[in-house]
Length: 351
Image (cartoon, rainbow, N blue to C red; front, side, top):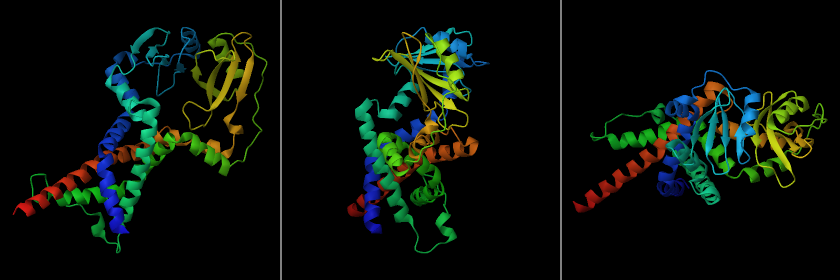
């Protein structure tokens, strides 16, 4: 069993090594997306947050795509139009910057990490490769699991690449730090895979945990809101304990526009509750409070926040960062060690 798992671990690892390095590298960079944007575009270094009223006025300028309200980790008004271009507005609603779709390395990294720049096809491919990665991790644990435990299991003898013992350093580093940092590695890999199969995961958890609590109701439904400022103000009256986080700009076929809201303490940075308003009468058309949803659905909505370290503070951030770095180094050290063994075998045969 161990030998069979070891062979699968090796060959599958070689197969997905390049993809895994690139996905882990882009994912690790994206933990610092706001800082990278502000470094590349200094005009985004705002001293204060734009107001909700300013955001509403900006939203009225667009009729395609979706938009984010300003928050501490994204201190600007951001609109992504129907072509994927990102528009940024400042404290007074002034236009700061437009980033064309795939116009810089940051957006290329984002789109590659999400779907390999291939949209729906890329998501399907990412899902399969993510499942293979989980199997590689499991097989690595099985292959490493010792028959006898000792302190030597955690040792790494360091040699430089030009020294004779470097191949052993590669091997020991690969297995030892792969196990030490396994929690962060698994957190990133498992949540990333679950995101690729979000609908199936959410449906399965909802079936397993269907319990619901229907005590949450809107404070009022009597509103009339015909522009985005009025809709944002209406949202505060309907759900006074929630904050609007994201709006959908196009008018839907049923003549409504919608927004998502986040309740106090919710993990998801964009919230999962929603409101929609008629664009002709301004009346509230539909509403949903995610706290009324099945327990399984609510649990499924914690996956994304865990994947992007939106919760847990600095400890979870460090855990994910360490796991991401190790997901880069695991395929590098593994393939390097395999190439060294192949070279050694070739040299032995020639002799």
